[in-house]
Length: 278
Image (cartoon, rainbow, N blue to C red; front, side, top):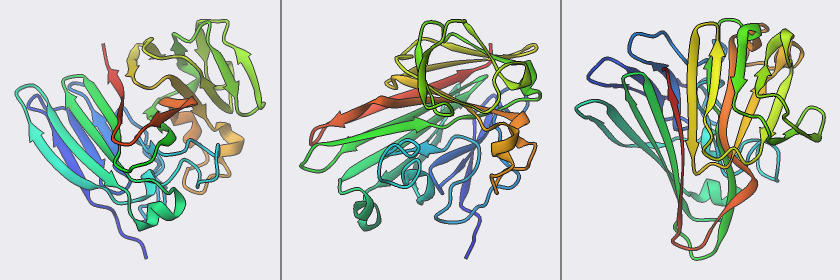
């Protein structure tokens, strides 16, 4: 049985908007002031309970990709979240969504936790904050990511700047390497079928440029970053993506993968990704 999940529109006083889905606790759309849609959402996304929505900003938790025994990217992106608050301030608007452990999650991952996703929009910036509290009496550890799908007009015209000197794991080649150039070129002029985990990014800013458009991406709390594009061959095998969808998106994800986050009973962790148009 399929049903379109509950969605919420968040609008700041200056007119910037974000659309949120309570299914997966996920940002679906971001339109800054004076700019078009900045996120990619596949037209073939299946809004089906228990399935992930392809695009926007899925929450990967408590496992990134297939690096563990849980379902790919964990379970947070396929479960219903609750809306905690929705408020408009003087210059921005804020929404908070929450996911708590349940019998369903404990069958997969035997830990008590509370996740909160806070989304703040205003002007030409978007801040997404993921917080996790260990509400149990035993330690837990997890990996996580904000799997941000940026919308692009032409992947061949896109570059990512700010990665020089970082080691990365190439998930396609299953090998580690060093990023020597400051510019990572994507598409047919650069790298197609791109799936890299850059370690130790921490708080260094990344600049995604496409012709005159620029998006500055900053993160806090997350140690790593993932750059992903399926390329034409892998994209053709994705049932929830159109065959040419790969040319219209690039994922730049704030992540903690190389060193899992460890929380003792009662401890909390916070990670944030901020996107801004200069």
